[in-house]
Amino acid sequence: MTTHAPEAATRPRWEDQRGFDDLGRALHGVTFCVVDLETTGGSVGDGDRITEIGAVKVRGGEVLGEFQTLVNPHQPIPAFIAVLTGITSAMVADAPRIGSALPAFLEFAAGSVLVAHNARFDVGFLQHFAREEGLAWPDFEVLDTVKLARHVVSREESRNHKLSSLARVFGSATTPNHRALADARATVDVLHGLIGRLGGLGVHTLEELQSYSSKVAAPQRRKRHLADHLPHAPGVYLFTDAGSRVLYVGTSKDLRKRVRSYFTASETRSRIGEMVRLAEAVRGIECATALEAEVRELRLIAEHKPPYNRRSRHPEKVTYLKLTREAWPRLSLVRRIADDGADYVGPFSSRGAAEASLATLHEVFPLRQCSDRLGRSPSRSACALAELGRCLAPCDGSVDPLTYGAVVRQVRDAVVERPEEVVEAVERKLAALASEERFEEAALHRDRLAAFIRAAARTQRLGPLLACPEIVAARREDDGRWAVHVVRHGRLAAAGVIPGGVDAGDYVAGLRASAETVLPSLAPAATAEESERILAWLERPGIRLVEVEGEWTCPVTGAGRHLDRWGPSVTRVTT
Image 1 (spheres, rainbow, N blue to C red):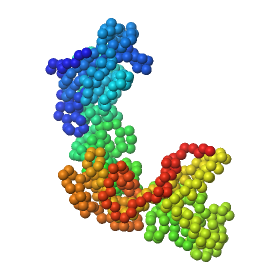
Image 2 (cartoon, rainbow, N blue to C red; image 1 turned 60 degrees about the vertical axis):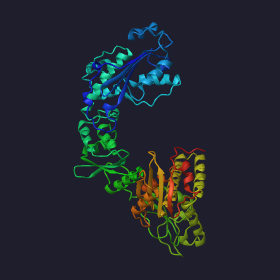
Image 3 (tube, rainbow, N blue to C red; image 1 turned 120 degrees about the horizontal axis):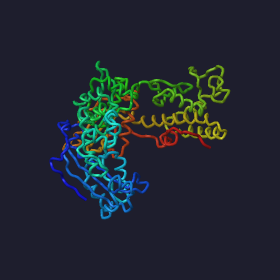
Image 4 (spheres, rainbow, N blue to C red; image 1 turned 45 degrees about the vertical axis):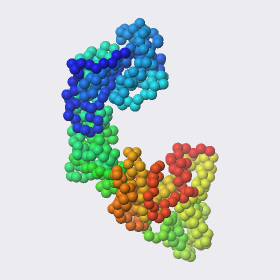
């Protein structure tokens, strides 16, 4: 087993990697450990074992050291393998076993990025024997020169992407010969050749190298400079076209890194690829916290309605389910909340979901479904629903106000606090339909109930948050810093991170003083999606409530406890 540092004369070319910017991990500062194995066969599943490990460690174009050892496989080496590699059973008889060789290699490769030609084979063997020997496998990043070459070396240059072929293409000083160290040296030259070519295409960091794809056209790569002015900080980015029209809005923990990836990584979404071709500038808005970035993204999408954002573009196009406040209340679908004392469920993001919830409630409660305004003592003919027993028919005097009012209270209780009556009624209906093998009809009722449960849970969770004049909360985030948010009537009014050495109380007081003023209003102060993002943050472990003005509650017997069963989509109904 040998390791050594080479003489300067053996250093491969690396001029193409000099002078890169500091985005990500610049390639000239990354330590690569290029490894190659020889084995008794092609599959660990068939009992094949390692016979030789060879590796070369390089950084910035300089070879830092080499590693080579034969390995005793404790089984005969097949004749055809001996002919191919030149390694015979006699040669490995006195070699160390894998239990000794592998720890030595892992120590040599520690802290580097593993590189192999067909990494799935080499790294797969190494990981297998690490498990077999009870060794902890380090969290290596892995780079495969075969996969990379498929995007860089055309068929006109080489009929295939074998190591021997690529070594000729890049003029390797070492000819691969199926011996581990020689093949590792050749792979180093291939790696350098690939990186040299990609440097001219704007691939300057390890992250860009790992995600490189030839599917990204050269004109798209040339736009990578659009990210150069952006900070390495969390925030929101906006792609704009030549006319300053906002094309797309996104958020990231690292603005420059994320935006740069649009020009150097393979973008599988065709619409986003089209957007990048149209983009002429990228604007970044730095945010104090990840939650602030999420909220700003939602607001900017709603404001600009970018054509390449699919979600959150039209928060105003929502539907509410309303239990009216009149002599003979009814359920109806409306676009906005009015100052009329009525009860509202929602908002629903689609009218279809609202109609499904409405149908569920009508199945359970015999409220009138006509849209006419009825006086206290109506006198008209009843409709077909009354004959079917699905309406109490206040229109023809069939029901008195007291009885009808009791049903209205049941409806209000179901949507505001306890949906058990609705759930139990629909479950009985589902069981009856399933017993009759009317599965399609049962699925319809199931989906309607799921829509109602989701909407009721959403209303019950968001309602108390929207009613609170102010909630101030703090949390120690993953980076160890304390993030503070001021929420007023369900809207994010301020966000910040407490600086080191600053009194926390003074900082929070200043943040509250500078926060956006949000006045109570019938209409929600924020979109439901924004309030849900805030609520999700408030419900995370480790939250500390600094101040709560008002009451922030949620009914224990509410619809939320039914979400696990009825919130997700159910694929079938069984008896």
